Image (cartoon, rainbow, N blue to C red):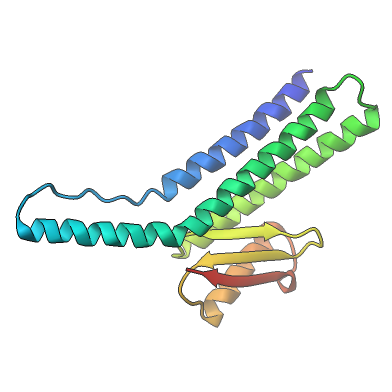
Length: 173
């Protein structure tokens, strides 16, 4: 029983930390002065337009991360219910535990890869592991040169422990 609770708490903690980290890292709001002069008003309008453009650009990434978090949470809850169900067979419980551990390990690797990609200067990234073992990466950028793409492929291949030939990289503004 204690082991089940530990796994469940660990899962929820990881998901919570991922969401907190995501919102902390992506909270790029700058304070705006409250002067009433014409110049200050023009600057405020310009800042609002810039913030709106940035928000629109990152909406794709925010929506994806939210959806992915919700899906992971739902999968974790389903696996936890199988583990906690007294009528589940020993094989079902063991498989659910293994699936939950795999899901948590993959989520940790994805989060680390995203952190390393953003450390390279990209505002945000999506790392999606396919069922066939391939990994699709989308970075927030206007364009991506070959050197940057190779660097990202290397980061993701290392963190996800896959061949770089299984990693594809694309961009989204």
